[in-house]
Image (cartoon, rainbow, N blue to C red; front, side):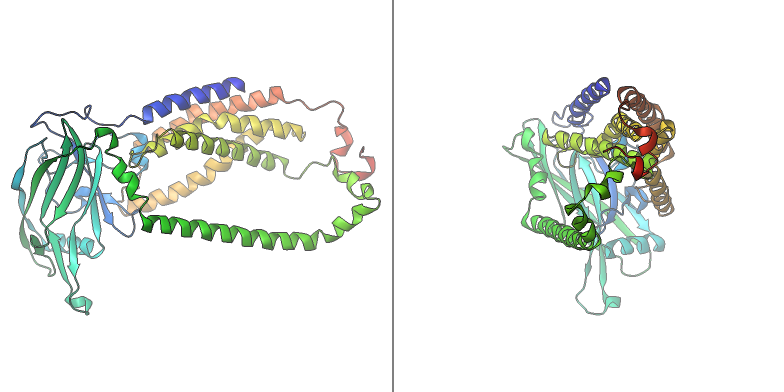
Length: 433
């Protein structure tokens, strides 16, 4: 088992080094006029971040050659679907009202965009690995009657890009409400989408360009929500603990009184009696130990700065890989504990350990993935990704689980001095004290 732990630690260190590298098409250094990678990611309602769709599911301007960016496993699990954006933001090239395309929106396109604007749809893009967001339009509610609301679609975006020497530091976008088109009525609309770019110099070093996103999650309104959740959880746990303690005190009141005299007569039969459902109990212990190890490794990676804000897919990649590598811990713990309880079918116990967490997780995933496919959401995993996860489970998780089980069977032996031939039957009269 020691070799398994060493191997897990080595792979985790390698994973930490790999996850700490920002993925990009270059070293983030550019010359004037160089193409800087810009990818459109997804769109979705602002009040429901888990509901996201592909960027070009809405009738935006589509480039002549749209290429999907090759993404890592964690990015796909996170729902990212990056494609080439319709804008060209070359390094240090200012542009004034550059046309993207002219198109005629059909009645169906207008209805789709109006529905998106009414739900406060936002879009997300990545420019040189810097995330930024913007809204598609706005709803003017000057009148109280919802039927008289006015729906506006933004058709112009202004990019403010800050640079330091030969590197991109920050990007902000602005939408001009005066440059919007009315999509309130169901009718064809001619629209020309455009954008402008302004480059500005800054003294912020490249190494600190992600601090902006770290600070945004520490704003007072966010901290207030976090504290409210923590206090709510603590109060709930205390109340449940109090209720459980009250019930246990009432039930066990007589049991606490009996041992004061000849107490050993009441408890001597329970000292060596094994619990019921020993296989399930051991599987729970094994799976819990594995999840505890997974949580510890994730916290260690977070402490060394691997999961910096908007490091696409790093957390999900770490969860999948570390869970697969720590399956040996589950096999070792479950098997050794099961044999201490004088279990005989350790192979079946090992199979139960492997399916105890993955089984319900797989069924839940099948349901949620089916719903995502029906609604064409980006949360739906493609078949290739599902196949990769299955192969990881079959080629990494299952073998390490078996190796851990074999190690647990070899290392843990039942002491010959234990009177297991009789006490395992649960007969208090023949138990040894």
